[in-house]
Length: 196
Image (cartoon, rainbow, N blue to C red):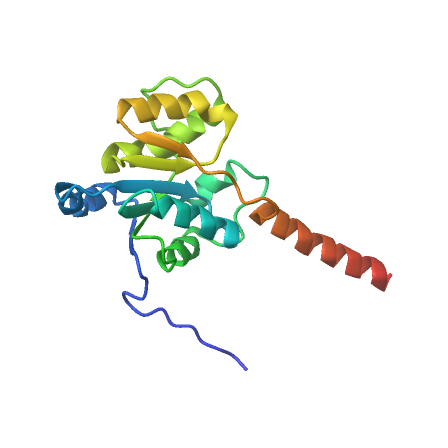
């Protein structure tokens, strides 16, 4: 039996802007004029799980509007050995249906993009490359992020330049996409070993 999933227009709870940062910035003007706080949270969000939900729920509680930044396939591949299991369109649609998200955009990586802000290592360059265009256009009041010591100074420089408050959101212990994939691989290997 084959099930056909058909995506209906406007099916998502949140509006997806992709890389149309200026369009979203325009849409947020009314929100800002009303004195509301714009929070931004980012991640790859591959194989969406409870850790992702908790992070987004915590971010949403910090303000009025939550803009979620999903890393593009190219950007996500920089951090891991393997590309994401789910492509960027599916990951953005998944986040758009999360109750905490109001808007979804995508951070992309372009090694040819000129970085005017200082960076100290490859990870800093990659992070600034992905997030400078996003933060510059959207200008969130708060940016919720994980603790990553290799990009601490890069975040500090970017947040100071655009007057953004950075808030570290600890990871949910015991669950991550990497752990889920590892569990699946381990189970498959164990089954293969049993068969031999």
